[in-house]
Length: 463
Ligand code: PLP
Image 1 (cartoon, rainbow, N blue to C red):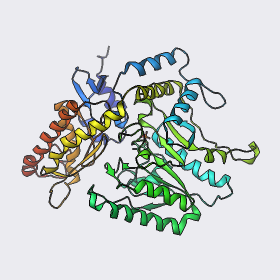
Image 2 (image 1 turned 120 degrees about the vertical axis):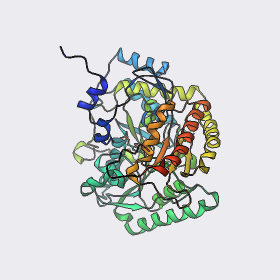
Image 3 (image 1 turned 135 degrees about the vertical axis):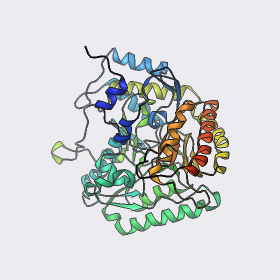
Image 4 (image 1 turned 120 degrees about the horizontal axis):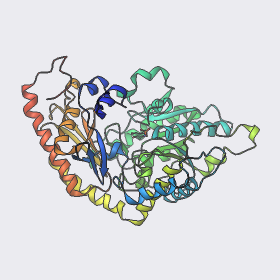
């Protein structure tokens, strides 16, 4: 009989991981997560790690939350899955009501799907068909921000254009007008100019092309995968205003920012705007199950009404659209928001975190630290004065994150930007553990970089 093989052996033999250099992955011993509790992930040996990226930016109330566990178990006792194509279900309807009650005013309808990319893909299709149904089929182009990220499906990649990820697929992508994302370093004195410059650029695109444009799409307030790039005050309001004036729709992608991440339920609230379509995912179920939603204004929905033979129907759907287990988890998560002061706590925790991060800005290899609520990006640079970057082959960001595991901390970088995006319930003490570990490891880069020469073959970056 064959001896039982370890999970890491099975993983390396059979699995292909997302966003992962498989050659490096299979050469190393993977960390196998066996359980979780609160903000901690627990490995096979029982070691505990703070989940500093909220299991890919989605965990809200921690892991194994009794109320969410119970809601899923209750639903499991009734039915695990039933389709929304031709049938209704209680969890999907109850959750839709709850979502509309917390969403920016004016959003009226909920279209479910199962990932952030499908939520945005659906918004692009809805926007194009909205104009088609209104007799303006030529309005089918989009405006996106440079280096935005909306997911990995073809439409999401087209509007997102994250050059680091999507280069091989460029020939497949459709034409999009890219407006420069605001260039702002967080300096209050420069905010008005940065905002005005970005809005001027978008206005120029809309002046020239609005007759063919269906919608503008932005990640409001902060662009996540672009490296936690915070927008200057007034930008989101300005984009809403431009979209209205040029008669194009506004799509807000709150897949990353939604559900309390910025200290408000939705980032759109910060400048008091309502988009025509709002994309939600990640934290919608508290980080438990795959669910996403695209919320629409009543006027958008109304453009899809008519007799069946008029062809106005939105022909889009997925097998697991509105899955009852996921909807039950999402409803339980929203009930936890309603019955607690979590949003106020996020704002207080974010203020404490800002204090803790301040000293990092003085480190020799830190170029910039950006924060919006509990979203943080820390740029590691070779030289602070010139902001010159490390040789990418060093993979310094990845190496720092690997070493953080010895401190019981899990983070994942975007290139050489370290991202911190913990569950919203994280405590100030737990954040201090993360920030202290980070400071220690970033300080070590210094000594190591001085003695290490990077050869072509030394790409693993264990400085
Ligand atoms: N939109 C934004 C703003 C995101 O940050 C992400 C993922 O990081 C997505 C869309 C895609 O979500 P998913 O990975 O669930 O497809």
